[in-house]
Length: 339
Image (cartoon, rainbow, N blue to C red; front, side, top):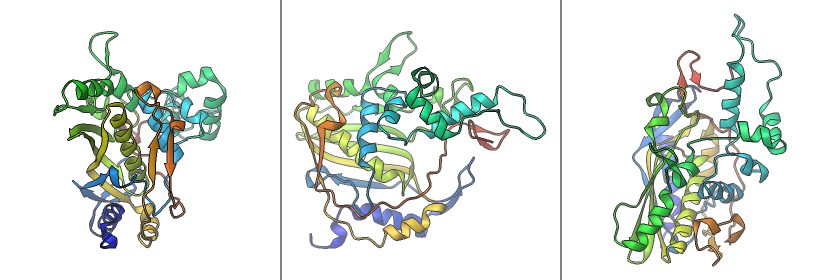
C-alpha cells in the first residue's frame, strides 16, 4: 500500500475519531446515556481485497456466524443462539419477560417488584434447559429472520420470502434495480404500532439493496442507528459475509459491501475504549472461504465458513447500551425495562 491510510479499516477508525471529536451531543431516551452523533456517513469494502473483519480489536466471529444463520434460516427464538452460547440477543426477550411479570401485580406506593422474578442469568439458563419455557419466552417476533424469510402479509397464511425473491430476480433479470430486502414494517414499530403489537426491540438494519455489477454482487446496507464502537464492527462482518453467501448462491463473485449510516454514534461510556482503539495500527484483513456445498439459503451452516489469517489486537470490553424499542412515558423508560 502506498500509505497506511489506504488500509480500508481506516474508514472505520476515521469515523470513530470524527464522532469522538466532532459529533453532536444527544441523550438516549430511556437510558439517559449521552452519545456523540454523526449523520449520513458511508464506508465501502471491496471484498476481493480481503474480508473486512476489523483487526484493531478482536471481533466476535462466532457470534457473527450463528446470528447470521439464525437470520437466514428465518428463526425468531433465541434458544438456537443460547444453545450455541451466543448471548447477543438475551436482553430483549428478558425485557419482555420482565414487563409481563410486572404487569401481573398492582404497583404499590413503593413500586415493589414481582416476587420470584428470575434474574437475567436464571432466565437464560431456563431458556437453554426448558423447551416449554423457551417456546413461550424466547420468541422475538418480527425480527430480521422473519422479516427476511417470512414477511407477514394482510392475507392470512401468506408470507413473502424476500431473500429468495432477490435470488430469483438476480437469475431472471441480472440488471434488476429493485433487489431490496427490508425489515422496517411501521405496523409493529414504535408509536406507529398498536400498543399490543409493538416490538420491544429496535430494528436498526432497515434495508439492504443488491446489484449485479458486471458479474460481481454488491450489497448496500442502510442502518438507521449504529453503535459505532460495539455494534458496527459486528455489522460490517455480518453483512459482508451475507454478500459472499448470496453471491455464491447466485453464481456471482463478491463485489462491494457498502455500509450507509443514518445516526452513527459513540456512547459516552465507550470514549476511553475508543481512544485506546485509535492508538492501534490496522493489520492485514483475513479471508473467508465458503464451502462449495452452500448452494441455497437452506444449505448455509456456520461450520461451512472458514476464516483464514485473522490476526487481530485483543478485544476491548465495553458495556452494551440496551436502547431502542417502545418508549413508555409513564416510567420514562423503554417498555419492558426493569424498574
